[in-house]
Image 1 (tube, rainbow, N blue to C red):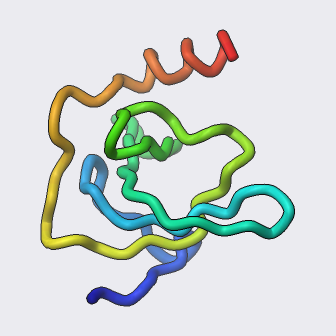
Image 2: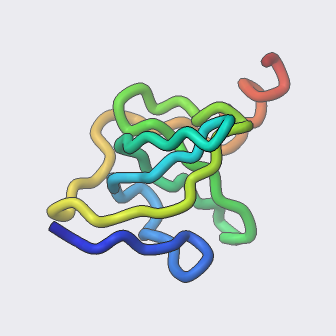
Length: 90
């Protein structure tokens, strides 16, 4: 199994499904599958849940990731514009 990589050190390629270490509130941590939705300018990234293709809640922080056998996103991921509209409604 691959080693965990700190997101401050390196990010996975956009739209590549990886295991992510998610820091929740009150010091709780969980591991999920997610992917990074990159922008054309690559100045901002957003992490999405690989199962639902929805953004993780704003107060969750992705701290580490590790690769998974080269899987890419199944289905049609949301565009950054769609994600920003979802966040404005929340």
